[in-house]
Length: 114
Image (cartoon, rainbow, N blue to C red; front, side, top):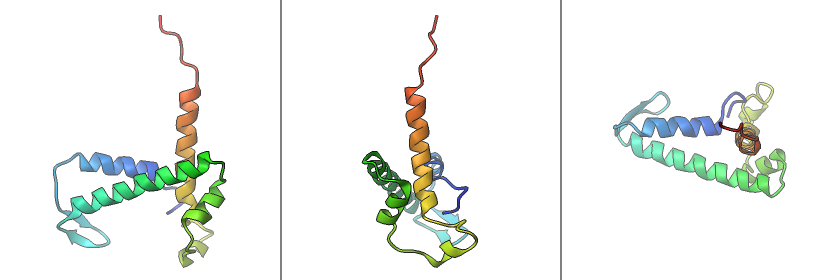
């Protein structure tokens, strides 16, 4: 995943897309997929499970780099180029940042309504 990408935003986009009526998709990487909807549903389920696992480990006190090493044991060659722009740590970091943001918004005091 690239540094500028976000797993929570990808999941939200998939939810928006899956609210539409369709079955097939054209993927720029894989071409025409007759069962595209089912594949996107699987992808969303995978991303949601991944997010839950990352948040659970983070709540247990693990640092994002430790979570990354625990979940993503394989080191992909592309990570080396260019300057780690593509890296699994960005997956973990995006989930942790979203979690921290949601948590801080939840803890902020609300203005009194008159």
